[in-house]
Image (cartoon, rainbow, N blue to C red):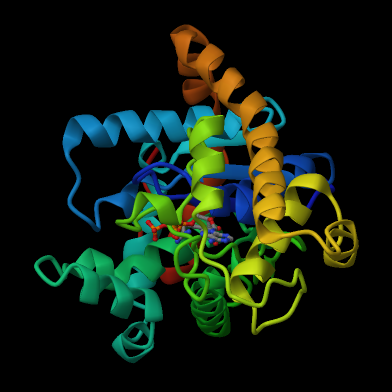
Length: 334
Ligand code: ATP
Ligand code: LTN
């Protein structure tokens, strides 16, 4: 708790361009939380180097991500938006937690297995201990709730296990966090293979809608989206492609799947795909305009980066000191 508010922390990796999946599954749900909760949203740049990054490109995409957070509607005065690498306590706590995490636990992580299969030339220790850094991110702010997509639940589970283990040894050190899954858009699927999630690292650009795609591109991608030969707009698991398009349309317009099915009853897939494309383009357009404006205002973004890193460091240091003391490190002479 900070004051009388519960704490929320989440973050995204600054690798590649954000997709509609990232927006509908995560970012969009974050925007309204700041009235009720004390919110921390980091650009998870320390996580990004588990895959090799080109320095100039990395720097640019990290700043773009922070700018997009604001463009998508996160008010930087009501939400603490910062770079993970500006708050060194993340890495310090991760080291301590490494010593309370078992290799057997890390061996079970599906993201590690997937990413090491994809990047077999660079299976580094950071990729392996990634969930420990993520646990540190969450526990550093004594977070109560962590908004993530379903794909991150396993990481949240290991975070809880690590926190409970530390608490069992040293007493009440960490708040045990709970996942917070938004209702709409929890899992947006690839437009080219609707059994796979839409992912920013997908090699096929037609599989994902990027937040920076213009209207023509968005519509073209939806026209090409893989569906089925049923020629019937219905919401069921057998028609994965149409199911996904209904989810996307619903998330962009605020309509329930039933309402969407009724609206397009008797219409063809062509008409429906066009409508989904239009709804998505209308959702993205104001974000893109705001992003362009913000990108030009270097001084403003710099001031947000500085002020919020200071705020995050204050709370992070409080937890880190508590942990170091409980574990038995000698306190610094100040
Ligand atoms: P990568 O392809 O690099 O693994 P990603 O697109 O899967 O990236 P992450 O950086 O892992 O994205 O995720 C950022 C946030 O977006 C997380 O909260 C994640 O759960 C959510 N998210 C990612 N993809 C989707 C999706 N297709 N549908 C809903 N939420 C998603
Ligand atoms: N692993 C997450 C990004 C991430 C995160 C976090 C999310 C890093 N640290 C802490 C929530 C809380 C991902 O790949 N989406």
